Image (cartoon, rainbow, N blue to C red; front, side, top):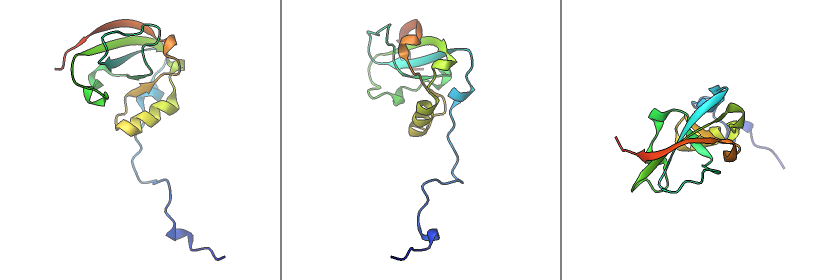
Length: 119
């Protein structure tokens, strides 16, 4: 069996493509994270895995069901609870660099749950 030239194969990684980084890697110490939900009842023990690190980046279009009443969940956690690999994957998937995934949502302290106004 003869091999074709390597230049005829496609490469999985494109070095020239811009990387969508994650702001999650820049977070240190105690951090405040924000999450939108369409569910009026929030489990205070398990508030959720995915957040954004910047309140100005909240986007209802990222939700599976963005219609209807929305609620803003604000939590704090230590930056050691942030899953950098999962955050990077979600940032690339959603084309948004401020998505943050937490390792354990039970380690997040819920500060508030309030109605979210679409401004």
